[in-house]
Length: 106
Image (cartoon, rainbow, N blue to C red; front, side, top):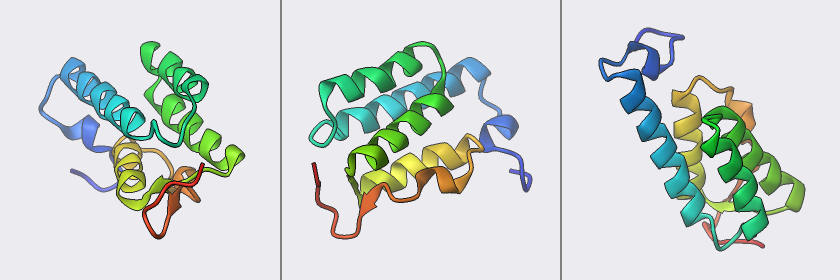
């Protein structure tokens, strides 16, 4: 990967395959976050996923967590960050979404 260019731009995979992987990765995160997010909150994120708006979906997830004072376990928050960074999103998008002890607060 070239510096400053998201990994998905320089990948040899087809764009369709990359988007499918991104969609699946975010949906897995959303499933694993079920104990901390309400069904309505998950539906809101899914709406953007269904529209192919992966960046907006991740931003919405992070905004919901912050607005509701909820946190993800550190390992799950790291996966959210990794997906977003790979998409070229700003790292500050993922501030304050995880607990240091890895537990849920809901």
